[in-house]
Amino acid sequence: MLYLDYAATAPLLPSVKDIYIRSLDEDFANPHASHSLGRRLSTEVDLIRKEILQDLKLSGQVIFTGSATESNNLVLSQFAQKKVVTSLVYHPSLLNRVRDEISKLSVNDIGQIDIEKSEELICQAELISLQWVNNQFGTIENINEVCEFIRSKNSECWIHIDAVQVLGKTPFNLKDDNFDSLSLSGHKIGAPKGIGCLILKEKHLEKMNPLFYGGNQEFGLRSSTLSTPLVKAFGQALKLSASLTEEYFQSARENRQKIIQILKNVFKEKAGFPFEERSCSNIVGFFIKGLSSDVFMRCMEERNVYLSSSSACSSKNKKENLALKELGYDLKMQKSFIRLSFGQNLAEEELELLEESLEKAWEDIEFLIS
Ligand SMILES: Cc1ncc(COP(=O)(O)O)c(C=O)c1O
Image (cartoon, rainbow, N blue to C red):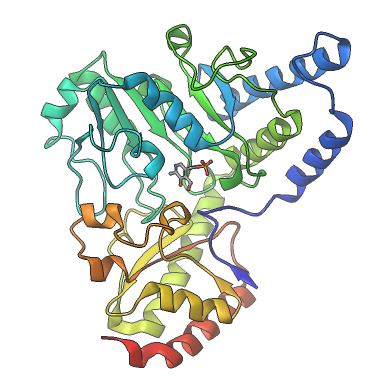
């Protein structure tokens, strides 16, 4: 099997799995209980909060959530009827709650914010939501530059950053002054599903309203009993991905180029790679002109190669790909978009398997090209 859908979910990392399983056994107590078993877990969880901030070189408070979708919604819910500025090229969890009310940032042809064209909106905004790495095309936003521009034009504006696709795909180098809140997700970096976090600047903690109410855990923002095993697994996965070196990213970029070359060899001029230049190291988003990506995906699946024709979250919405539409692609092009995403560098044999599977798939479906 060749799994090339890491941007949807990454497999559990071995050391994360060990920590998780051990914690399931050992850390069964309620971390909010006042007896010593609970107090021990609460201390350990607080230590992980500190380590996450240290690993990312950020300041603020870490609020554990069930997912990045929840983290994004927690922030958006504070801005009902307020001026929210964002982009349709982003993940639906940054959009669905506010889609009818948002003002759209101008983006260039690969989905990066055009700050000059967006200046007027930026000046009026109360919340600007940004996505650092695009989950579909892999484009990296010039995040520090965009945030500094926003700060210089509108110092009062809340900057929220969805950084879900950053760790492990491009170096995490956000300047601490450049955000008010930031979302992360465990299952994109080798932790189990069901854990994410919101990093929030301390000055905002008091003003925030929870999404739901109960026992006031997580600073009153996320009532419900925290899962210590999930927190420990997340902490370990984050530590590993935050410690990846420039050599790792360099070799991941080389690997990515090899994959693009294989695709170009097989599909020749039928394949288009508009996002190639500014894409993160672990996502290849491309089009095969005239071919339905769903057909292609199924054909690869028959050969035990798993990839994606859109983001997993939007694959149930069969109509339009809003992000590609926003970049000006018509429905036919939207339906010919394919995403390959991978984790640690692929071995030579895996690259060979990919090439062989692509060639065979192409032999089977070339005649379908319209
Ligand atoms: C950029 C981005 N933001 C948010 C999410 C949602 O993350 P979660 O699955 O943790 O809710 C995803 C998942 O696909 C994503 O890619």
